[in-house]
Length: 184
Image (cartoon, rainbow, N blue to C red; front, side, top):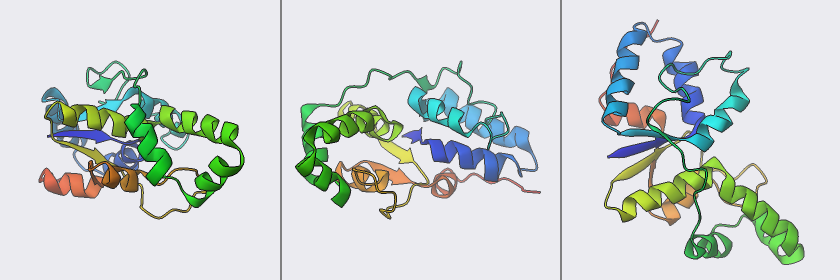
């Protein structure tokens, strides 16, 4: 099984797990082992988005998630298939997206291009590539299903459901992995 971590998961891992974990070395070892086994993956685009949270993270990130790590997936050139784009346009538009597509096609296409370059889209596309190669994949994200952000495309968990990509929260991931840590 491979787990692709979202930006919000890394931020929460640092804020709510690493910061209060009594034995940080155990937590780091847990993730280092999963990284060594290539079970945990982070897209380069996700790390880029993490840089937007530097203030929140106080200039730090969970120690093993550095930019030189071998498990950082350099997929800056991930290309969406025509089928993926067609599915987005037909089934995964929000009300706002459908209105924009109908009224301002050029603006809609620009927003779609931006979305396809986002970490969310790249995680799903990469997961689909891995699934096509016979891998089992779960995206670990804290994003809710509730559509409340005024964006053109539906939220990550809904997109994952549509493409039959498994998604879970950090808490679910830690339970699945039977991870047990002591907190201060």
